[in-house]
Length: 496
Image 1 (cartoon, rainbow, N blue to C red):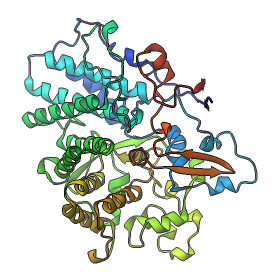
Image 2 (image 1 turned 90 degrees about the vertical axis):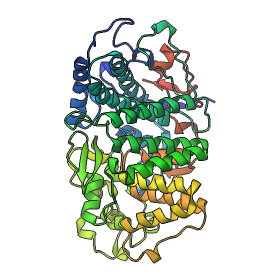
Image 3 (image 1 turned 90 degrees about the horizontal axis):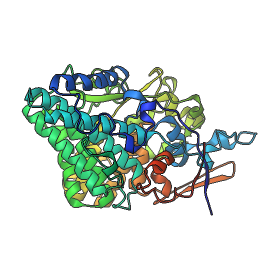
Image 4 (image 1 turned 120 degrees about the vertical axis):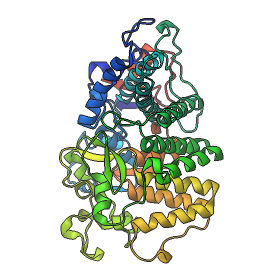
């Protein structure tokens, strides 16, 4: 039986609507127009200027989050934290827009073309930069910057499009600009091949930064802070989908470096509530980073969450049980200022809304760190649970001391590695509510199942559901028949 899914198309800039086969077409094969490091530097600088100025990728390409349209068709639709009480009790039937919550309206999404456009551009910068013989110092901080951007986009493509249970289904991968297009292999590589490329890119960038310091007036991703945090994220995901103890050890290593190595300039998490809120959700964009109490957080803008989302509140009972009363986040992120001291018994479900309270007064764009220091702590704890349980419990206490009031003796203490991992997943749910794609990807890697019902319309997401990986755009599969579509999407009819 065919599944019929209504697709609302999102128009992108022409440069980002091309298929994977187009993403290398920046220069004809065997022809060079970037012949020295200064011209290469200036070419990348125009991209970074837009990145810095707008806090998002050029051409409205994606950052480390799901766009609003995916929020309503992925995380909001199925995550157990959301209450659709207002929709369930409304006197009239659901509108067509509201039915998206149960009908799985799915966009023929632009993330594929957007990230591949970045990969193709960085391929050019890296390949031409490595060919030059002049100014090795400039080469390092220019090519190093491009390597991290390429690694990041490849990582997001892998997370969004690759099934966690099928290591053979990675993504197409080509880093050359010199191959004849007719000879390009556009099939999907294994996930291991893609992970190896990502890790090698970040390793090369780390080697370059060991030789040449970043330029604060130029670089954004080329710094130890981002490289270590991204490596921790990559190995964390790799370990989660493979179960490899080796990769858990690597995730532990890089999260530890991101927190404790002096080159990363991280430090302790803030304890006081004003700094906690400021660090997590606000900040001026200055070359993509903000310094708070001596450690930087990379900040990106996220498009404004629309008024429609105010209809989706947080489940009151879940909020009350998931967040302990001594949790600093319980009130700060969910209650308006007028309700901060109201006894819990006197609160109503209408008071509990992170959309209007956690994100209040942030202007037309919501600013989120892409590489949160707090995520590094939780990656570190989860990785240690697989490699060094006693150490994991110690770091958990440190984490709890920065998120909870009261004496450490009263904090929750898991007994087993499995219990500790379960607690980390809860902490990630407490910490990252409304922050881009983090919790959706947690659901994917942990095989979360969920059933949602609105006005009698039921949506069910299985733990290994085919919808946990995005559909490769039909425009891509039509142009490049060598690309295998993700399971479950091959019989979907797209209505333009």
